[in-house]
Image (tube, rainbow, N blue to C red; front, side, top):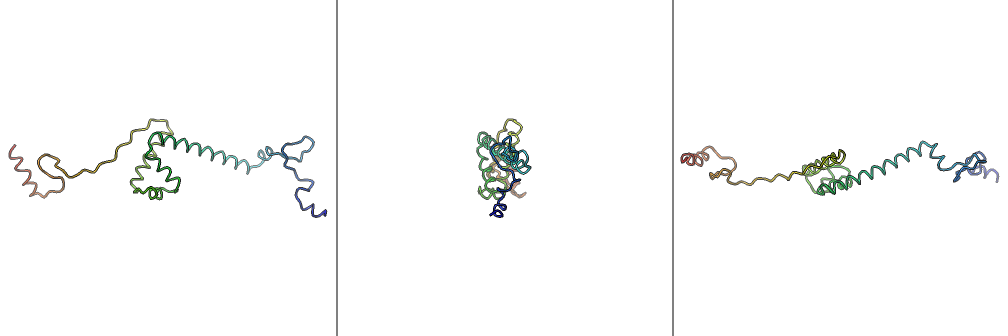
Length: 161
């Protein structure tokens, strides 16, 4: 029975006990404060946990900022967080890479304004494709004209000037 108790770590005389508080007469008892103060591993873990909670709070502030300033790019943040890469995020949103790139550029612009405290510039409207229509009032259509067509269309108009 004695050898069985010797194998148990709690029964060794020289081991320190993990108590809730240190008693003055028993120097072998150790509390949580002592462990955290003297353990490098616990210090690193506590610092990592603190950094992670700070990063979460910072990200939440940025998402709220984006929600206030430009709600249209909020899906880009959610897609990047959900997928991890920009290519997969573009696919997840059903956008082309160039469309997602414009959204990401706007997100970068918002991030710079968030970090610096500068006012957010107004978002430009997307370019509209022009339709083929009469540009000059002379009856010319936009597009490629052959030289003969150009002479037939333009020379009578110039002659009347």
